[in-house]
Length: 172
Ligand SMILES: *[C@@H]1O[C@H](CO)[C@@H](O)[C@H](O)[C@H]1NC(C)=O
Ligand SMILES: *[C@@H]1O[C@H](CO)[C@@H](O)[C@H](O)[C@H]1NC(C)=O
Ligand SMILES: *[C@@H]1O[C@H](CO)[C@@H](O)[C@H](O)[C@H]1NC(C)=O
Image 1: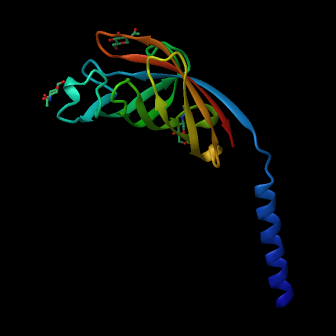
Image 2: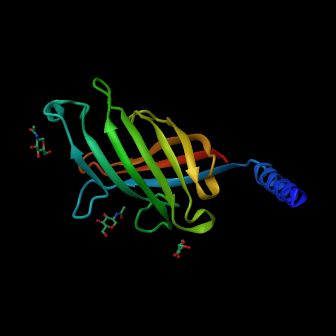
Image 3: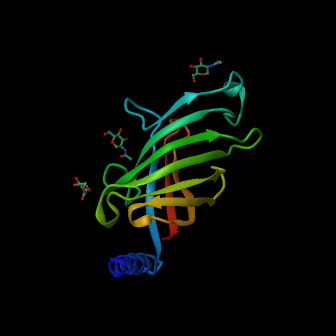
């Protein structure tokens, strides 16, 4: 009996060691993030604001919920869909336009289908390159950590619609 228990324990330890020793890899993913605020079917909707938000040059206090399409190329209509960016961004800069991004990149095609990475960080949208933290992940991205770099590809100042190139560097 004791020998059997010991054998089972040994197997359990050996198995968990095998799982933990899986080599860590670094994955680079480039996607285009489309914030559609205009038109009949926006993917970014403002859900809250402060009484002072409308008179703030930086929209300070606005809370936006997003389910933004992610595509492999910059053209929303012609590029291959890759997944969705779901979460919120909050205008958290009183004197300078800067959003706090809090979103999951949910992959829905290819080898990462069903996996997600969680991104949180400061997004000073008029800077050329904004860096945010990859704080975790699920599926193939379990234990993920890393960073994302965002670069505006197009911004329509009339509608507010934006396409942003995201480069993710993920250790997992
Ligand atoms: C702020 O602007 C929005 C439209 O953009 C409007 O619906 C809302 O009533 C305004 N809020 C205040 C407090 O003026
Ligand atoms: C994509 O298609 C929609 C209508 O389906 C159109 O309103 C929009 O301008 C198109 N965008 C681009 C970048 O072609
Ligand atoms: C992604 O995975 C889901 C669930 O397994 C599946 O239904 C779907 O067809 C897959 N999508 C692609 C584009 O492979």
